[in-house]
Length: 212
Image (cartoon, rainbow, N blue to C red; front, side):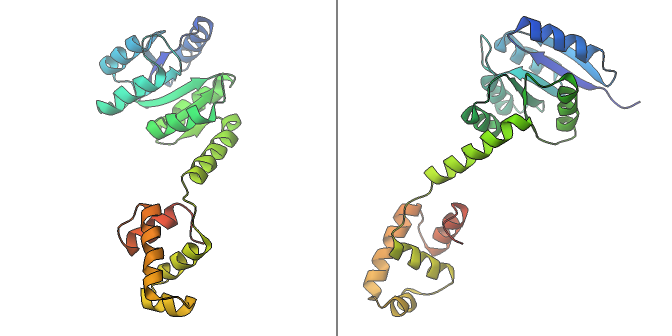
């Protein structure tokens, strides 16, 4: 018989907590190792029981769900964390996933969706409820745009040419500029991109979507 997936559950809403507890206990492939309504207690119990998967409410007394996740990451606890939420807050979802959560599931999801998420993250997958996916994509785009430096048309031209491997004199000839002027544009590019040389400038530009 396959090993049962050991699950810990923490949620500040008693009706939701009790309902999910009963449902988990009815699943032969799952083992509920503990539950709580308090984040601080949840962290202590996760450290003690070392479950495979922890289902955490985002907002709990004592410690928030993300604070529990931070502590697990800091202490090297292998438990994989799924957040349960009734709100589609794209910024919150982004931060949770960036901190190391492997799942973000709506509290409106049916029990089968929750059980599927537990199985998926136990297999090493990442799960996000469909209703949260559009918001997360929008948040990623927003953050990428805000993080993208604004280049002048000439700086964009110079950037494209150094990405092709051209030297400052080559660029000067192609753009009908002096080499000194090209170097001035290069200096401005390095400052905007937080780079120290051409290779790092190109790498940063590619990462920020500034090169086609």
